[in-house]
Length: 137
Image: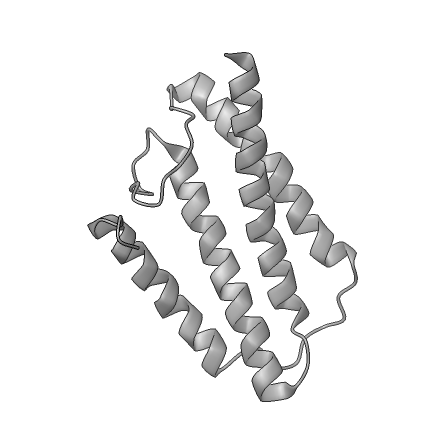
């Protein structure tokens, strides 16, 4: 936290603001969700992020480099910083849903698990893309 600049602090505040409503008033009743509804977002994130970013790098000349927390997610030349912020957004929102549901309803929120699964999938997709890009250089 000591190395955060203005952008990093604003991003942390945004994540905290979106975490709080899910802690206070989480989703109550939810449809039955199986393992596939949790695994599909993970698989989607792992596969989609490298494909989308690689395609955009070829077409639009975007830079593929490891994202840092202080990077501006709206900077179009570095799309991985946007995807990283989105992943952390899904992780914090899903965590808020799970904790809020456990506190208020004493049950596990499967939609929160699916949201966390998507966030983890995006982070894994970023790591996969960086390994692929490193091997190609």
